[in-house]
Amino acid sequence: MMDNGHSSMPIGAFHVIYNCTTTADNNCFQDPPGTTNWIIGLRGGLASHPMFEGTPSKVVLHNRPHPIRSLYWWQLLRRMGGDVQSLERAVGVEGRMKYPPRQSWC
Image 1 (cartoon, one colour):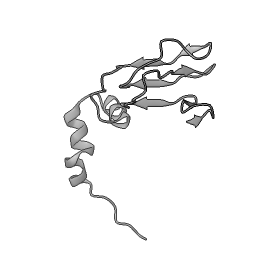
Image 2: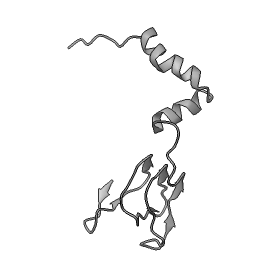
Image 3: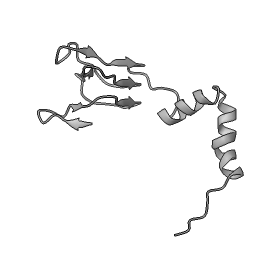
């Protein structure tokens, strides 16, 4: 994301804000024309009115963290059918023990 030069508000398109906390009470998220931004698990205040004409970004789970620790894990869990135990066996501690990291050639 880029800073717009007028405030600390980042600007951008096709961004994901996942399980973030902010101390500001007037955060404003809007989608530039033809784009979408995703705000998931934001803890902090939202502006009551948009700064510009346009579509506000969709905010999911406002002031509630998403239960999955990262966006990567959430996507991987969905791709693997939603079974947490299978995911942990494949890429968790069991998976790391079964498939040790490759040796570095450097």
